[in-house]
Length: 466
Ligand code: B12
Ligand code: SF4
Image (cartoon, rainbow, N blue to C red; front, top):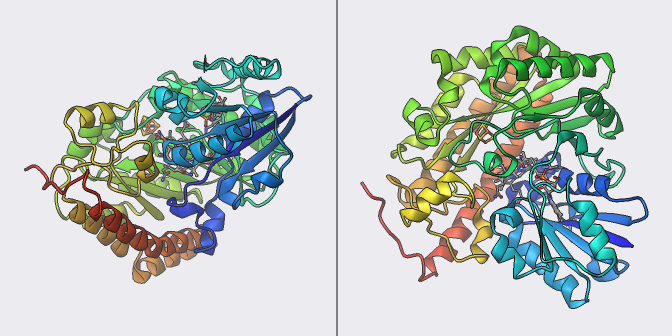
């Protein structure tokens, strides 16, 4: 039996525009979900993984599969349906799973043969058996997996073309921020994989650099931190010789031993969601965790950086508390915190989140011709109606934020600082230039977006409520 697993591309996602900006080569990440599915698949299946982010796939030239499995974030849904339609025309059954299929079951079910909701570990074997005997059901419910059932991902498939490998060590997040899909999808219980399994899987990753995809590698409670320390100790002891980047909450900075161990284990960068420059903003999205003990963000960032770990800070524009001037304010605050890179995204209501329910009930989802409009749900387009910011206004805030933080003067200052502290100046430079070159792509994308929106009668231009 031949299984073809597909990660569809969305050309509106700037990081996959590798041809337009060569820096983006460093930011195309491996689709770990499909590598995990492949790991769950019995060896008598012949498996191929197609990642459209690496370039267009020539499906007609491929041997005809017996089953196609498609994954999709919401932003990839439209392309997923095109690919599904292609294979269904050939009579090949198509199964779709992942976050979008879970949150929009009805929509997906109309376009594929079978939908798998939730995590795949507990159900995939059954789906394959049913496919083998031509008795696929319309829907399967995976639920939440036991971490002992998470297999080693097939790192041997998809070996080339990526700057980073990928691995996962935990699932779930208790914080349940209003805009985030993670708690709704992976649950509030923080589930940790066994440390020896993680270390063994790290050894299977071929790339020297690795993205740890966990939403929060260190967790929020003392027992989570203790486990993270044990993991880092085991990784250092195994002498993995990998450099890795991860996502974590700001409490990463609070424990000197944790930082020492992380650096020893190969940590070179951490992505931290600061989300809003104000306590009111953090309250609005339910991330008061960031304010615990009246935190000094500047000092926290410096403590992390002292261990040669780069800090990428993420913020959101478009909260109800955000007023004109928020773009410059975020750039200024991120500069003051001293982050190495800044990632600013539009507040976006994703299906299944608390924010989605709220905005839907207030009729504030502006781009709601689905599934077509899902392609704009990349966090890089304003798809909602924002309280104090008009459409033009919020785009201008984003541009002024990026212009200010990624001016050549400020980039030079950051690079000089990382040279002075010998904190990976080259990596820092690549990161900054990659973001800066995407500004040009973003400006063009906004212009196209505004043009498309201007031609649509269904949206209408509404002024923000005051
Ligand atoms: C790593 C990651 C990325 C990587 C993607 C690498 C890749 N190619 O997969 C990068 C950095 C590129 C990325 C980009 C984006 N991401 Co992202 N990302 C993640 C993250 C942190 C981990 C995903 C992961 O690898 N998990 C590990 C695997 C094993 O778990 P999984 O994907 O859930 O897969 C399991 C099940 O879903 C299921 N499954 C999945 N696919 C399939 C398919 C079939 C057929 C079956 C049966 C089952 C199945 O089985 C798997 C095993 O249990 C998630 C958060 C999260 N916890 O999921 C956010 C997340 C998926 N991302 C999100 C978003 C919004 C984005 C962006 C749109 C925004 C942005 N600017 O970052 C872009 C979109 C990119 C695009 N191409 O369109 C949102 C998605 C919300 C939504 N409804 O779409 C999430 C949930 C984060 C959040 N805070 O809400 N992301
Ligand atoms: S944004 Fe981060 S901290 Fe908040 S719920 Fe999502 S994963 Fe957890």
